[in-house]
Image 1: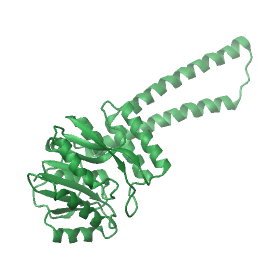
Image 2 (image 1 turned 120 degrees about the vertical axis):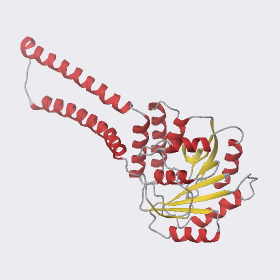
Image 3 (image 1 turned 90 degrees about the horizontal axis):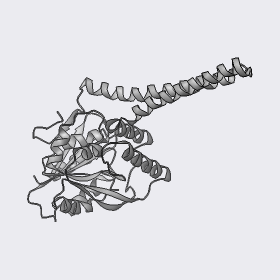
Length: 316
């Protein structure tokens, strides 16, 4: 198997057939030394996505499907595809057609020039709100500045990776997946191509602001301990301010005798110190929650049905 294409599916009935047609239109003319496979992962869709996938399976033996037992999330669905991909090269692409399949030959050609990872970098993002563009821009730049690895900005999961990278990902067992960060951590030679991201063809995005915030937390906590350092530094700063306030209070009481006791200053001090403490506890709690999830060692996902007969190679 030369090429595997991994496509996570969540309520994408409006796009599946068009995506399948466009994938075949670019993959079949490619001079691949081996065959290719399309791996669709149904991540607990509530629409007609699964019946449409089963129809494709019946028509084309190159189509594989994995039906997860429930909605586990985009990153876990991609992981399920990576665990079962047989290709020497693996493409990850979403089903909403915002990332054009027509870029796959260029990604493949670039990888054959000596790179292990070629990711697609967004030059523009059409059809998205100003708020989403702004929050995405801020997140990528914040993550780039606080992590110790080089995570490329303005990129999603649309990319091609070699077999070496696939094997590396399978050895990363954490529960809270942030795949683009994991691929950057693995290293090897990586490069990019730029493209203009199109509007969504049909349906509605499954990435709500709540899911985006969760993904951002996963990325930050998985690859940076800066929030913990900020909590520690904040504790020292608050302690220093409290010490200065105590000295000023003693000076006012015993030397200048300009002392007017009252609850406003007391309440401000309590609220300030209490707020910093609660924020610090919350940051520590986020890290502890992720440690707890990994200690439990539950499987990342459960499969309801699949037509892939080969033994899976899950993360160890």
